[in-house]
Image 1 (cartoon, rainbow, N blue to C red):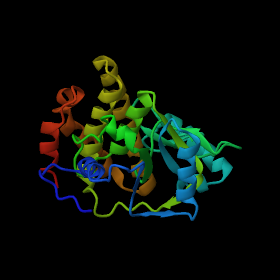
Image 2: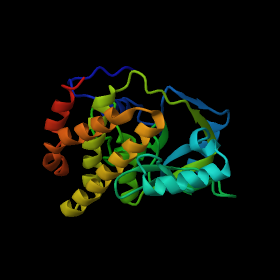
Image 3: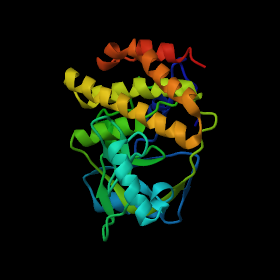
Length: 274
């Protein structure tokens, strides 16, 4: 199925919603997969069994075997320490997918022993499955997030979690995710999108405006510090740090509107960037 956008500012959430609407009425489980994942042979069977074993389960995701999970124990410990200080630089958690007050989506580096699945606060968009009843109850992916829509998977799944829905990370359904950033978002536009959409996500989860502004400020500081480390590590010099700061400054004009849940003007501005 191909989705031909009806508006210029369309994106991944709208495509997901149109696909859901086109499914047969008898569909029980809806599985979303990226084209750069490789499923292990028993992935589908194990994910199906999880839904059968937990009748109250709303959503589930398989365990991504590559990435930080591949590292040795000492490296994992160092990653956890670094991630605690600067989540944007190293977005990792201990045993389960978590979402911080700055709306950072963290993925576990360890598997909890002798457990088939663990509670999750968010599901990765590269492989996530939901009961169709979730959408029949009126839930939908947020179409205010356009184009590649950074964070749309976390935004949708964490809203379910906050509303008391059960979502799980399966330890038996395994896959490999070979992430490719090519052809997705021009680097500077991505930086601007990160700041704008993160402010929006924080406003969705923290309804007190003053608290939301505080946690967004924490995120901005973390991003700038992370950019300094990234620039040193990859030898990118001051140019990258300046780009991060410039992206944040460009977003400031729209902060009040975004904090109020309105992305219209920000998205229009985003479409002008190359």
